[in-house]
Image (cartoon, rainbow, N blue to C red; front, side):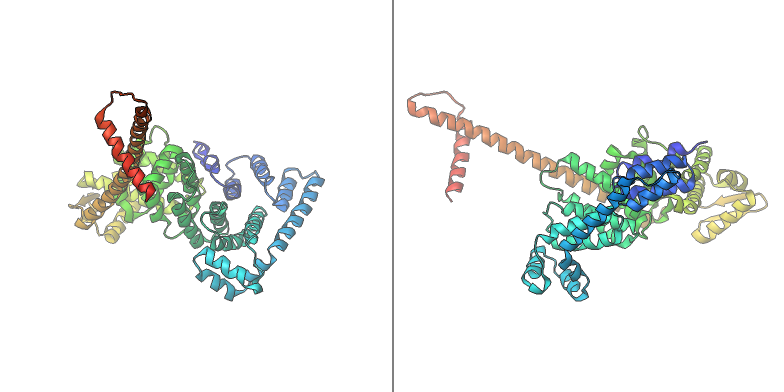
Length: 485
């Protein structure tokens, strides 16, 4: 069976910066999933839009070993170096400041950008000018396009400190800083930047004129970029569940724009034993989106917890292993995934049957009977399951396993939190819509009043709705008093 149809690289790549696509293409090249010349051509097309001229030259030599490097590429390299030097000269005072630890410590203690800019501008020793902020941003972007991600991250950090959140480039700075930290594999820094960017987008920081569609697009991009962080950071396995499953705005983005992300959410729930309480909510989402997206991982969950088809779940587990082996983000989770998936099959099987044949269990777990017996023994010992093994009959005898009060409480609290957030969002939307309706109604009533008011001096007596007119008079009076005050 060919598993290239389950490859999500090209779907995910649509929502990534071109620099973030490089690691995915390198992974595919190492796996030899696709033709090497096609992957090299894809790299060359992406690199042609960057300033990574040396990398372009290397790829061309691999693709066309008999051809010399075109003259235009050699000339372009000189232009890039010249422009880079000009940008650095324009912000030379700032670069000197960043090399002084005492100055950077002082800058970091000042949380208000206005205060910081005033401090830097009034100190003649620093030779700082406000125009240098935009120049610093352009230099950071240019460095990023050249592939110098460490320098880019450093420059963008300075821009974050001195820029106001209302600055036109502030959102781009947040995105660039996150991308730079991902590419240098600084996962702590990347997680901090991911949190800042998410809060900025959720608080309407993308601009008051940003439409709901633009906010949806921003969240869709953030969901894809966050995969790098969540599957490499220690806390990522919990955070991905919180963000993708229990943040309604991001769950909506996944269901609307990118249901293929359910593969990563399902994997995170499977490998995270402490978040088994999220299974119920995950199953609901998978069932809702089954008509738009399915793969062996989501189908494994569906067979096990919806259909209770253990044979189908076993077959899907085999396919899941192949899918994880060809997935850039999930390959490191392969052993944990298989171990926890087997545990889930065992736990579900035990809830249905009180006496289980070890041979049957071994078959469902894709293991040999002896290996399965040892695995069950270790599982009973480590997990403290209420179970016994009858080696003579080859059976596992299960005891009663009621859900602990603590677990019940945790599940109810999580469910209540999700409902509360959804209810709050609904109330805010209704309140906003109601205020808009009232404003429109008042505007119409006032217009009617003014119409009658303008006509009455001419001696005309016109029939009207006295309730509307009296209401308009009261509104008009209030508005007049407010304007005079």
